[in-house]
Image (cartoon, rainbow, N blue to C red; front, side, top):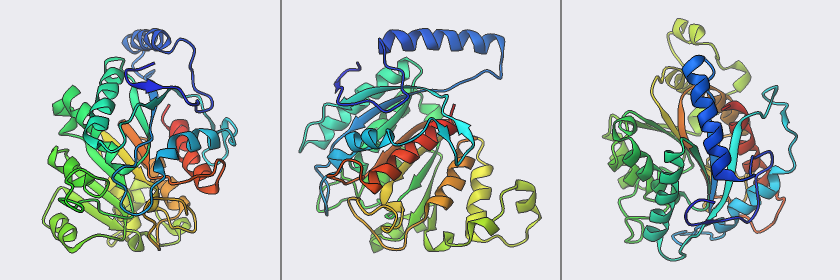
Amino acid sequence: MLFNTYEPWKFPFSQNENEIEEIKCIVEKESNAKNNIKDNEKNIWGIIGVGFDSTSSFGTGSRNGPISIRHAGYSFEKYNYRFKKSLETIFFDFGDLNVIFGNLKETLKNLEDSIDELNQLNVKPIVLGGEHSISLGVLNSLKKFNPNKFNNTSIIHFDGHLDMANDLQGEVYSHGTVLRRIHELKPKEIIQIGIRSSSYEEEKYVSNKSDIKVFSSNELKIDSKNSLNKLDDLNKLNGLNKLDELKNILMNINNPIYLTVDLDAFDPTIVEEVGNPVPNGIDLNVFEELLEIISKKEIVGFDLVELNTKTLGSPSAILAAKIIYDFLTLNE
């Protein structure tokens, strides 16, 4: 177990026997392989749940997200039909963080300490929320561990909201300010996908920033079967629709990526149980196309947040688990 975590459940297909010692053996084995065979580089992932929702401003309940996602994960086969690939990725489930309800700063510090431990083990984090504010704890740790790498990292942000408020109801640290605080950490860029709600102040803030790109959900609503997939095709095109423009940007990223997915990026007809649902969101096909492109890059961490369900096995929880399942399948 990591510092400040406990075990409520495990995500299916994870390695869990004698976790820390097993990880050390795997890391040593992979390091030796990398020294001998350059192409034999594999990721090792560590899942941590953070059931914190104390700054939620509309609907509380995302504290139930981690256990709901794990439970829903048992509905999947190891073979991923969508991507025609079995889940062979090495990953561990370290249980849930001991959160301090009502105290975001201390909870973020506990999370940062746990991510510090993963960094020392060369294990990449997958964090299950919980509200979106928890992303800041992960990124604080990644910046501390390797500042130069962090400053060259692209933040890929799926969300229905900009989350760029300077404060929300007087609080500068909350689920609605998290991307503003992340931007202040100075990553290379932030690419926001699925946006369809913000304040005027937030929209004005991002419009003046060359390192922030915003793609609204409405701009991405085209027939994905007719969109372009090959970079050669994209380069031949004089005018790109917004989805193809986004794909082109993602294909051309040559630096590390941190991926953060707020489930309210999806349309409420697909994911109903979220903290702040917004109509007219993206669909799963578009997300999976983009995830497949992103997964060809170096991903340094991933969080999935804002599942707000009180029912085990709900359709929203199953979709959330599918995203984790797809991510792990693609990021061996």
